[in-house]
Amino acid sequence: MTAAAPYLPGLGDLLPGAVTAALLAPGAVAACAYLAGLHLADVRLRRALSLEVERSGNVHADRARLEAAAPEARVRSMVDAEERRSVALPLAGFVVLAPLLLHLVVYRLLGWSLAWSELFVGFDWWIRISVAIVGHVHAVAAYLAFGYARTLHQTSTRDLADDPPPGALRALGYAVLASAIPGLAFFLLPTLVVALTGAFVMPAFAFARDRLLEERRQLGA
Image 1 (cartoon, rainbow, N blue to C red):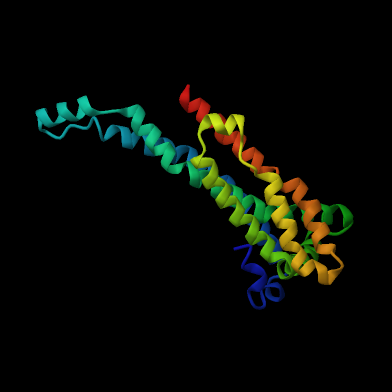
Image 2: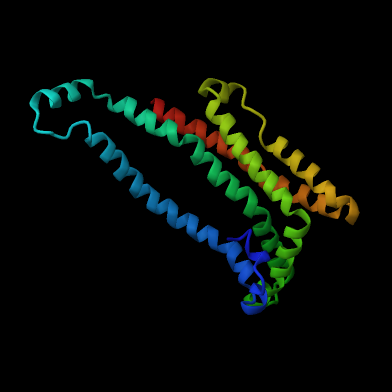
């Protein structure tokens, strides 16, 4: 929604500040999804485990199924199936939206005397300019996030702790390199902005790795 907002014809004219509002909306949606997920994940796990102990009316079949039941393996299988996606989607969403959110904070500090309505309207133009000049950098960052999630998923827990794959610096380097394509035409100002912003945003790759490693250790315990 946020990525599409700057391209919707007349959106800024019909609803001033709507593009900035679209930037903030995913944060609220993500928070609601997280809270809902805490409940739904528990329900899903209980349902998956209960299938192995439900009675079918056939005593012999029920006994054979109970003897073959492996709840620990079932839990590990479910976690393994979701691990890559659980890293890729939040990480990609964060590295795409966080730079503009960080810019909004700076814009708020610089325009501290502006009303929120005026600030939203003014920042709409910054989002449009950013998407037009370095929008492809956000796409590169999202692509790297998905690739990094795949790498983490394929890396053993021991290697993840002892020799973690490159993440933050690699992503920052590619983002800066990608921004240089239009940046050369603007005296490298977009590249400088991307580098400064990325220095605050790209450590999310390291955080994702540490979080995944901690979850694996908890599961192992």
